[in-house]
Amino acid sequence: MSDFIQSEITGGIQTICLNRPSKKNAITLDMYQALSDSLNEGESNSDVLVTVIYGAGHDFSSGNDVAEFVQIAQKPDKMSPIMVFLQTLSKYPKPLFAAVEGRAVGIGATMLLHCDMVFSAKKSSLCFPFVKLGVVPEAAASYLLPRLIGYQQAFEKLVLGEAFLAEEAYEIGMVNHLCEEGEALSLTMTYAEKLAQLPPEAVALSKGLLKKTQHEAVQKMLLREGEIFKERLQSKEAHTAFRAFLSRPKSN
Image 1 (cartoon, rainbow, N blue to C red):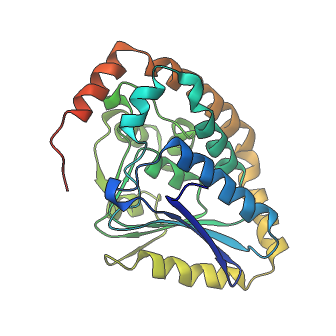
Image 2: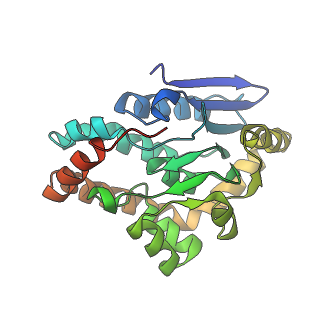
């Protein structure tokens, strides 16, 4: 397992930590594999009643490691760990919560659409910068987000790709509960502990019913987005955008 992903199980709650704070928890291929392994562990371990994902440091995740993506663009077949993670995430049968602090960018934002509950600090921000990077949305965001917030709002968020505060995400239904900075994980754990007290089979069956009508569509969109994303990685637009991104002055 990647050193940048830490998984622990205590009191029926599995916590999965994106632990690469020096890079704002940007996700590498090794980390995708470790995330899949952690979710598979949570699914197969009967002691796990709920899973919580959070980021170490000041940010949830800045998304894909763009420097690594420049290399992947030369060999798009290397994307397989990403697709495996997205399929594992979208099919995860147990309750999945996210605790968001700071920035949630790209996959750091789209993975929230697959969580059953999202808790965020008020001034955290979300961003879907795919089009700006010359690619397209992933994680079935082009299906899930319009269903959640409507077509026009989804178009603005996914195509313009501008960052927006968690307070707005709460208003449009992407976030369940807001809190002060530094309190997202503790709030999430409070709800996770509540859920862990409920009958686990009834919880899992209820989640299955809620997800059932969209399951097939989500899987189809995951694959379709993945195909287009892979093609776009080799486009001139993407190569130009990646070079521009990597040449930007470093920000804190």
